[in-house]
Image (tube, rainbow, N blue to C red; front, side, top):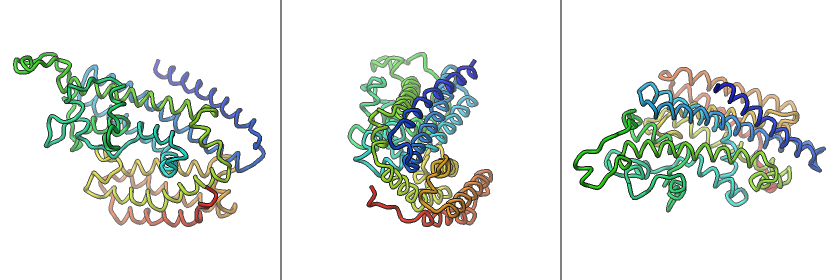
Amino acid sequence: MNHILTTAFTLLIALSCCTSSAFAADSPTDNDPLDKATRYAWELGLQSLINTEQASRNLSGQLELFLAEPSEAGFAQLRQEWRNCHQQWQQHAVWVELARGQAHRLAALNRRYFSIDARELQPGYLDAVQDYPFSGIVNDISIVLTADNLRQQHGLTDPSEVSLGFHALEFLLWGEQSQRPFTDYVPITTINAEQNAAGLTIGDLPNNRRRTALRLINQVLADDLQRLRQDWQNPLSPISQSYLNLSPSVRLALIHRTAHQLLAVVLPDQLLQAITNDRTMHHNQFAGDTLQHSLALLSGLEALLSQGESPLVNHLLVADAGLEWQQQLQNLIAGLNELTQEKDNITSAKLASLVEQLPHLANALGTPNLAAE
């Protein structure tokens, strides 16, 4: 049954994509190769959102199974579904980085990304931490747990006050020390005399509020992913127009600068964090998996620059140089993929040999044309 629903969902999205593509094909600048290439890049962004949305449906299904019957095995599977979904999202991360560098021009898109992927969070804002066992929204019974209230609490006075998105879920699933037990989600059905005297109800107990928070945050994430996919798919939405209304040369310049920043700065920093003991430096500071995160991001970048009838890399480099650059990037991705399979055998020397290739790839793309922006 799930397979049938997933297939139907995929067909529905594919039909909608055809509508979006048809609109792009009718554009006045259809004969401009650069316009077609940069529009196709937007369609690749849509495909990554479709894949993430499907993974989110799998995550939601596993979450409901776990909450219905909490167990160690079910908790492990739920965490794995979070990883799967987040890695699909990282295929889209090039656009997150692009929007971050265009805070005013792409303000609406940045607001969407903040709800979905805010990661610099204060753990104690959401739930208990080691030195503050009664902290956080989960333990503050004055906050009624609803989707609207969680949205209001998100970034209430500071960007680190995170109550929504992938990394809020990550913290609830792994906990501050990455050792949260599944028993934190076992429902409590009775209250003791002390709790009764304090005026608490069963719904006020931490386990039960944590269960509610987990379900709500996941549902808001699923809703936000769906809404972003719909707006990305609609060429007349403000989200789409903020990109499609730019000239092709500006679109290329923004993608070029983002690719250069990822290869020269962001990815080298993230990969070197993978072998540090300070988990707060990792992209997923509670779940880990920094190498897998970086691999997914790099794969998304490779797809963005290399796919299509007129790959964007060919608009940045001459044909032969473009093919050579693509091959070098694919070799790096293959090497990083092999390294992720080694897990406990990863050494700084092995990782450094891959990391040092990234700035070379950035430099080979040339200096971004900031004047075009």
